[in-house]
Length: 211
Image (cartoon, rainbow, N blue to C red; front, top):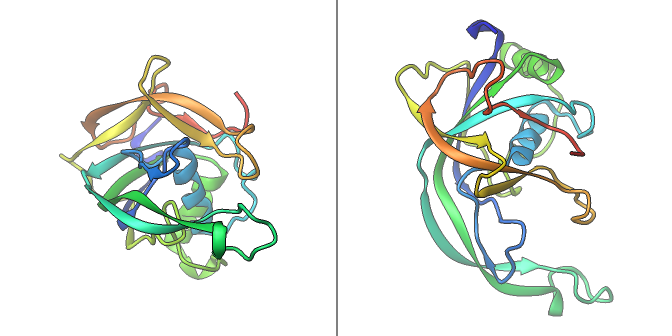
């Protein structure tokens, strides 16, 4: 694969959090955004509402700048009493949450339908029809800016790399109704130069809804 066949983005997010799957009262964050989160961000960027449309998309990404970790006290909404409105009574409670500030990631996409739409969005943003804020993670975690095909020469980042013995389980597909359909994959984090991975590199992650 030649370097000019890959779509790349540099994305900055001032404040974000990627809640670990089984975190409850203390909401820990992952060090890097999960592949499912990056995929969701890309769909939102081009206004695609059907997550199934671009199944099979292969992406790779790295954290370019190490964000600062903080802990905040927030009110979390839960449905404990279906007779009460959301966010009232027992349907809310205070929780501590870890947040990351100053997140910046580089994203690479192999050629395909989603890459073509993102490329078109960069060339002709007026052709994109979407609504709401553009986020990486929770709806409050708004993206500050995006650079299409940035100059990353000489820079390094921390990449999630597929590794069956890795200590970093991350979801590549999330079941929003329940957890049964969520697809997990094991990763390790490695520092490497920010450039398009080779065709068979383990940094490429295929988005799929089943193993």
